[in-house]
Length: 89
Image (cartoon, rainbow, N blue to C red; front, side, top):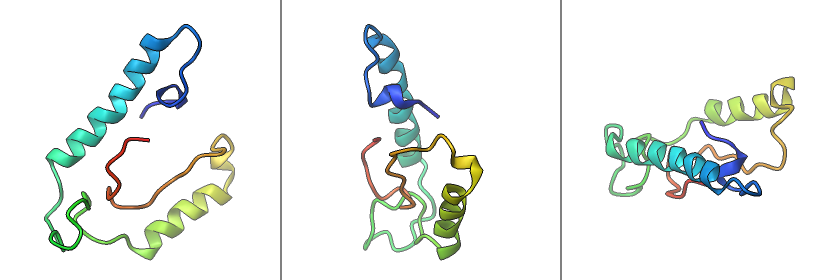
């Protein structure tokens, strides 16, 4: 878990941004180091989840976004991609 400072440098806080982007990179690196079982690995080699996303998993994100729990989730591009995208932002 990181913060918006990984993407937006707070004035005078470059050192803080470095720690936040490091958290994102570390999480991604660990996920790639310990991928799941390798289901359909040849067709989708970057799927860290090791399987396709179920419709219920997409629905869970939609339910979250439609709920009061997402009050501070604004302007974010959220993905339910099983780890297919290799960037950390």
